[in-house]
Length: 161
Image (cartoon, rainbow, N blue to C red; front, side, top):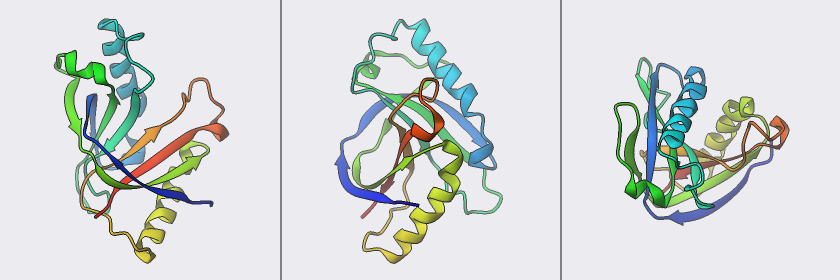
């Protein structure tokens, strides 16, 4: 598996989000979360308001290696327009913290993510950068509804010291 990496610094961004919880990240209902986010965007007439800078992100809040831990994932759209929005019972507004990150790019199906993460963390154990104990996220660069699965682009952003 080819691991292309880079170091990036990014600023805090505001995002709308729908929170998922469960015992295992791969089995969470991401489809439902994206439906709820899309419904909120549609109901607030934001389909055309989100600009080219909009980011589609899954923010992973907990360490999946801790046995028995209840895991949380915030499915998000980050965009400057978020500053004008109001939360609802299901959709919240949050800050995705900026900082320094190591970023990996996966080209291919989301089903490859588990193996990709194993490679990433093996590399990080041997590398010069030290991950922080802070939430990491996946950033989706194209639309799975219109992109063949082998052409999907996903960035993995891991905060580092």
